Image 1 (spheres, rainbow, N blue to C red):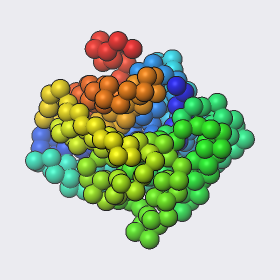
Image 2 (image 1 turned 135 degrees about the vertical axis):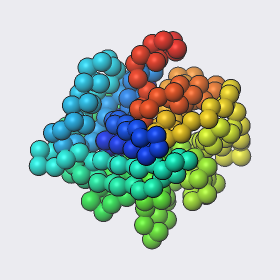
Image 3 (image 1 turned 120 degrees about the vertical axis):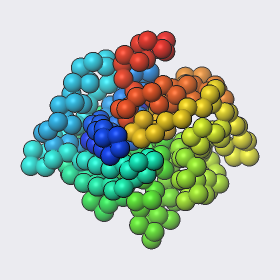
Length: 289
């Protein structure tokens, strides 16, 4: 398996008021999946645009630590990297959320990009990377290039609530005609009817509840081994950890239930971390890669 992950690298900043705590992490759905996939032993390439700043430095440093992670980053010197700032009240309630997509909007589809895509086996991306007119056209081109190069296509519905209502139906039709895998959580499944993806393997996660997979008329349900009560920012990225683990396992041997169990196992490890992605030390200690 060789994963190409295209999206918006983001700097995640979480600030909790009571007690006061702050967390800064590399973030973005596709970034998390690329990092997690590499840590689980499969080569991945992260495509996206960042500024020449702390996020770029963090990604380059992490890539030096993880043998399987390659960066296909375009550095936009006149822009800052995309950033999400979340303010958390007492009781884990979100008080304010600020988003600046920054340099991630400036990605260009180049000949080098096209070459990197043809080297892959599966493309992963999310709706967060198709939610503005600027990036949506490039997002569709990336998906079409991957499909034309015979890559499998995996799409996360993360970000569906950021898509304008009139833009969503044609976007879902575009995905339906091309995707091999669809990932969503319970809230996203309330926004997007999973049954429209008739020829895709659809995987729906539900925090502490069972994950469900559907392929045509077939359905699988697998519960996590144990439930962990965690709060932001520890919950951020758990679904991305599940997705990466599921793809690594399923594309290795094609067993859906086994892939779901592995997804739960790796997501449980992520829930121990404030970073939105897995880290090498945890996997080296707890998982045989």
